[in-house]
Length: 471
Ligand code: SAH
Ligand code: SF4
Ligand code: F3S
Image (cartoon, rainbow, N blue to C red; front, top):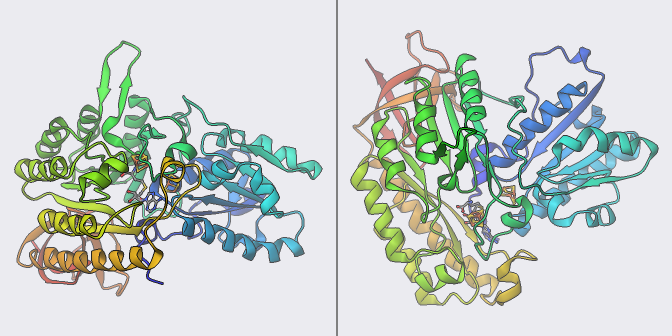
């Protein structure tokens, strides 16, 4: 079976256990272990959960075998994401058989989708908590003390966890995610997120700004503002003044020119010229937009309820490049959505040719129970056709990525240093404004993580730029 690159795996070391803290583990009365799957929102939520548990006297461990509480923060976006979680639970089963006191909790989108059914399907699970119910985790843990199971999957119209300071997990100390909104009001027919995350709500702007300021003051140099559809961020302050996404971006950018600002994800229908001009105005707002297209065919887009046409999307991309000629652009593509014909698939390939994305996350359509598509349409593109179309999409994109990276040879970029390079401790690894990974020799210069360096590129693969520092 062919696997499309998985956004979450690539960017976030899917499923990696977190154990961040500097605090002495001996001071904690109990230990928790947490694994996260899915999108950045889930990873960000795990940091909220860690904070809640921290206050209850729980400390982290990287070894689930010694944990009192094992948590899986789950994703339902595609069937495979759910299968991964089920497999993972089997690994925990063995440990639980030896240590019956160990509690196993399922958080996140799969918890929300399956609710109490999860407890019937997976007998070893003790706690099921949906994305809006993490504050109740201590009560749910207490409920299990008598041996019973506990569930809270209530969705909320207000919850944004605005007042909870996330405990940064597995952080490089340079870049952090900051949730600015929750839920999604778009009803893309293929998508389970509106059902698992509930209605869209924006977090109080001041609490976002405070969190970013605190991060900056503690040495962080990059924040990524997170939401399923950040461009529809809208918050009304107590004095009735409104904060739009463009305004929020600007305020975060003004914290310091040394603080890079990124955001994800933008919906093509909602990203405004205001946002583009704000990006162009501030050097520290990164010139990179992730703009999921899903399909290059207008009929399919309409069937997906994406509310834009092929032409609208192409126009948006042109507008972005007009305002920011150096802007990096990536996308998401789905192959084989219900009723997609061969010609309509060709439209996706031709749109990719026109837009020339620097990078893409590509998937074959996976029907999710309860979604509008599952209720209205038949999942009628055979699996082998979906896969073949996906390979064509991936092959085309690989060529475009290689070309995009090659075109950077000879250019000089400002790079924020994030870590040692994976390959060698003698090299730094960081990213340029366009979100491309840049690797360069440390040399004798006195640089450290969180510093900026100017790097001239002299080599490129399809996913990394390699260069040397220039002063
Ligand atoms: N809020 C983001 C997307 C979140 S889900 C947005 O609107 O852009 C991330 C990506 O997963 C989507 O962009 C889509 O490409 C893919 N995806 C979502 N549901 C899917 C499904 N049922 N089958 C295959 N891919 C899916
Ligand atoms: Fe899903 Fe569409 Fe909302 Fe993105 S915008 S989370 S694809 S419903
Ligand atoms: Fe998955 Fe839920 Fe995110 S379904 S992609 S974890 S919002």
